[in-house]
Image 1 (cartoon, rainbow, N blue to C red):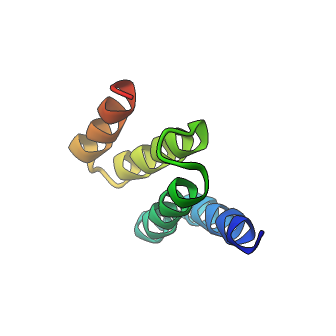
Image 2: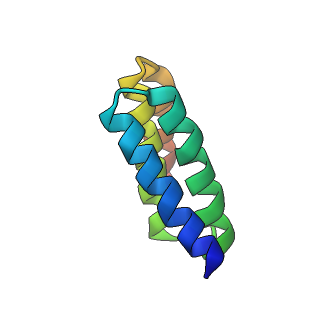
Image 3: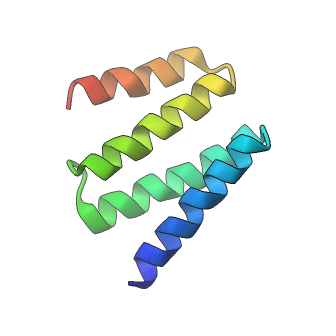
Length: 78
């Protein structure tokens, strides 16, 4: 239960930093969200894919187009 609560908090913080255009901080929290979701739910769970979509968007917002595209392509291959 505690891990799930930590997951929700980190997801909310990531979203908050995106709204504030602080994309590097958002990326840090989103990476932790991905790690937690993989640990709790397994790598193939839809919520992990959703978190990866979010990090792809964050990378693109930072101007890291190739990295963001790579994330999207990896999701297509799942």
